[in-house]
Image 1 (tube, rainbow, N blue to C red):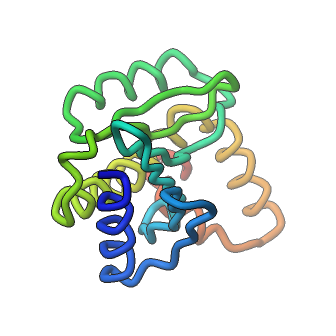
Image 2: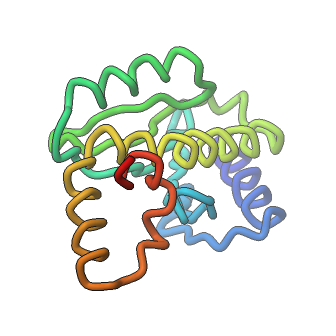
Length: 162
């Protein structure tokens, strides 16, 4: 079953024209292209009983940890295939496990879509909740120097004075 699962993952990554590496048999890493989070690195690891899905979303929040983690936990209630997790450093990831017998092209595509959707759609909220002071300082620094603030456009609603 492990070989079949690896073949399915390889097929789906190839058919979706995603560049990927297979660092060892059954361990696949690919970058999923997003809009808010420009790319999300995802690793699919074929194990003895299941395929593990792992993706980095954001580093440890600078501030407002309780609100960030609460938001992530509430979001977990509405998600498919993966859930937000926090590592020993406080960095935010998406993780999941799917039994080998459930690995089909449709399921792998759905899992990759879930990772992309959840990482991408959550990214700005995580930044707003956990990095607001840093974003505000960056914005003010750019304004004071006459620099472009285009990369901060997603946050204009709360950055600009009212």
